[in-house]
Image (cartoon, rainbow, N blue to C red; front, side):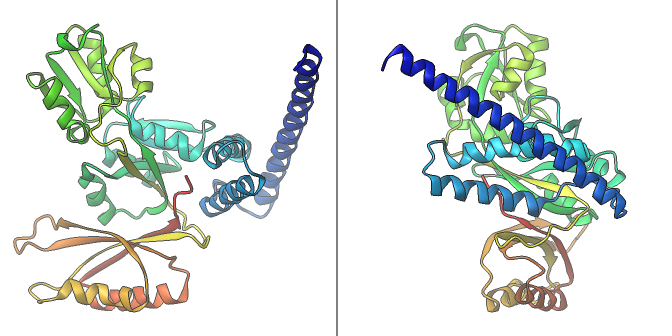
Amino acid sequence: MTQTDLHQARQQIDALDENIQSLISQRARIAQGIALIKQGMGDTGDHYRPSREAEVLRTVMARNRANGGPLTDETMARLMREIMSACLSLESPLTIAYLGPEGTYTQEAVLKHFGDSVRARANGTIGEIFRDVEAGAADYGVVPVENSIGGVVSHTLDELVHTKLRICGEVSLPVHHQLLSCAEALEDVVKIYAHPQSFLQCRQWLDARLPDAVRESVSSNGRAAALAREQGGHVAAIASVQAGKINGLNILASSIEDDPSNTTRFLILGKQAPAETGDDLTSLVLTGHRNQPGSLLKLLQPLSDAGLNMSRIESRPVKGSAAQDYYFFIDFAGHAAQEKVRQALDAVGRTAAFFKVLGSYPRAVV
């Protein structure tokens, strides 16, 4: 490899960069034209289409595999998502409500799903996210629903029962917890703030290394990091790398989660019903009739008869019920637009005491 070879390779990269930039600008101009076409057709709402985006990203990943990389499928999808996000912002900038403050994992989920070209609107509670989207203060909301270690997020399930919003998509986010503090050494920590789920996910690590430190639960890990900054000294927080940067905290220990495969699933909430993509999930909530043996089996039988693969079933007690009634939350592969799914849902609805389809939406791409 000579200096001439290096110079020629750099010239090739410069030429490719110029071509890539030109093509991105061309794409952006077409996106602006699409916005005008839609406005002329009377479409004045947001132009984000979950099914369309999922199909584009799946095509990008398949094309990358066919071309042999060398970038990973996930990397290519992330690059394309940012291009799509920037172009969509020219059509109709989106406001996305999430569980704040800045630096939470929910904010990371927003950026992973929608890209950086959105207005992220921090909320103090999960309930506020639902209210923001219902009232039109935000176009979509992102809420945590379950963690591979800590289990379901009960507040989200409770809100889903009564909301008029639909589930429009999902995000699967690997979660790596950091122990953050103004302190310089681990042995200086006497108090730790974190979300209750994070304490569950890091319990073994904390028991082994900081068994005497006081653990205080707060509404989010972003809030935990802010408290560690405000109180300084011997206080620490469990939060993300980004939360540490935002609050100027030291990383005393990295990836302290007990399970390295620790993953949190988030739901995208909105008012539209995504079209079928061929790789979709449907979520519903229902209750059986009181004091009937085998009522849950009867509820699920139509799904089984239709050959629908259930990926999740969770129960939550019905608030105010003295008879210990339960809501059952169910996810299965398929879309409500499919004939066999529609027929199965109709059969379930005739059997259930309470029945509600929460949404049919594209399965998480990456």
